[in-house]
Image 1 (cartoon, rainbow, N blue to C red):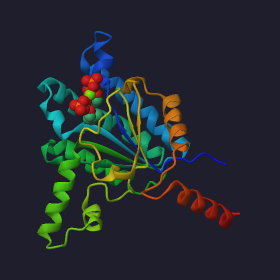
Image 2: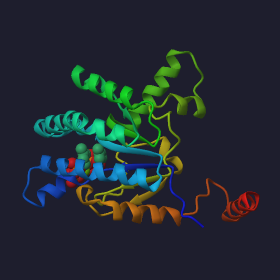
Image 3: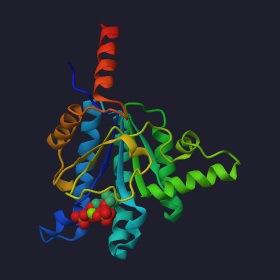
Image 4: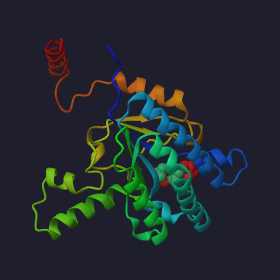
Length: 243
Ligand code: IPE
Ligand code: IPE
Ligand code: MG
C-alpha cells in the first residue's frame, strides 16, 4: 500500500527570530534563512506529489512588530518575488497571494499580480503565500461580500467567498518553532485538518523533516465525525471496488 500523501499541506513557518537570536544574528537574518528553507520545501512538496502548499508568511498581527523588522520583511517579499518567479514558473508552480493587499505598495501589488498572471497556467503545485493574512479577516471579508451581494450566509456560501476558495481545505497543517497554536491562520479551513507540531525552527526545517511530517500524516485515521469502524468499512469497500 502506498503512503497517503496529503493533497494540501499548510505551514506556519515559525521560529526565524529565535534561530537568528541563538546565533547572535539580527532577526532579519533568520527571515532570510527562512526563505531558503521555503525554497527547498516548495521543491520537495512538488517531488512528493503534494498538489497544494499554503504558507503563512506574514500575519495581520505581525504589523505590531518593530518597524525595521516589518520593512525588512516587505523588502524580502519584493526581492524574493523578483528572484524566484522564473524558477518557480519553470517548476510548474502556480502562485497565489492570499491576504489583504491594500497595505502593500502599488509596486509590490503590481508584482504580485504579474506573478499570478505569469503562472496561472501551471498545475504541478498550487503555492499560496499568505501575506497580511488573518483567519478572522478572511471570514469577515467573506461575510461582508455575501451581505453586500444580498446572498444568504451558509457554510457553503461562506466557504466559497473565502480567500482560499480556489483550493480544498488543508489535509495537514505543520507548525514549526515549538508553539502549539494556530495564531489566526486558517481558522475556517482547518476544521478537520490534521495538526503537526515540531520543535524545529523554520530555517532548519528540511526535506527529512517534511518527510517525517508526511509519514506521521499517513498513520492518522481521519474520521470526520464518523466512528473508526465506519471509516474502516468504507475504506475496505473502496479498496474492493478499486481491485
Ligand atoms: C516567523 O518567525 C516569521 C514571521 C512571523 C514573519 P518569527 O519571526 O515569528 O520567529 P520567532 O517566533 O520570533 O522565533
Ligand atoms: C505566526 O507566527 C505568523 C507567521 C508565521 C507568519 P507568529 O510568531 O506571529 O505567532 P505568535 O505571535 O507566536 O502567535
Ligand atoms: Mg514567531
